[in-house]
Image (cartoon, rainbow, N blue to C red; front, side, top):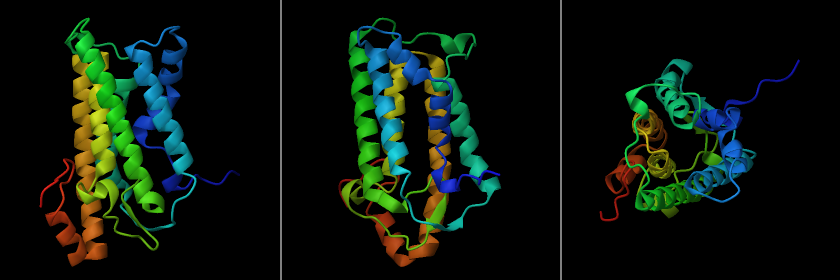
Length: 222
């Protein structure tokens, strides 16, 4: 009998959707010339590769939120993943185009996707072995306050939301913006749960940290 995969080694829901639907690889192979869609796809491929490598080393979990609580943020993220990354979504008005054939929007889409993914990867490496896909506290958990964590408490979510917004602009559909809103809801719920875990773990140290940083939007002035 195969051993179950540990919780911390499981991909995030939208990354699972990305891989299962092969939308990234198929999108790249479809084009001989790198257009906006294929560039965005390559960026997400880079993100997926880096994330998979980073999963190989994390600390053991000391405490984890119950499954019922994890579903509160996982469900919006999974629905958002399907709406944004699946090629099989067929609705009416949500498929309406917003900025048809606009090269300026295409350039902004690539820039935001690249910037967001880069920021999320930067934050992921600063978090190091303290990272987990679920709301949890690790054995020997550290409160990271350097790098992007100097200004924002959840920089991975901040970067991903920026990248997802860029991808939504590239897709140029109403349904893509709905997907981003669902991602935001899921990340907001998850971040609130994580902050409660951190407050219980680090006490007044975390309370002071909250006062000097933003949650999802960086605070550069104290």
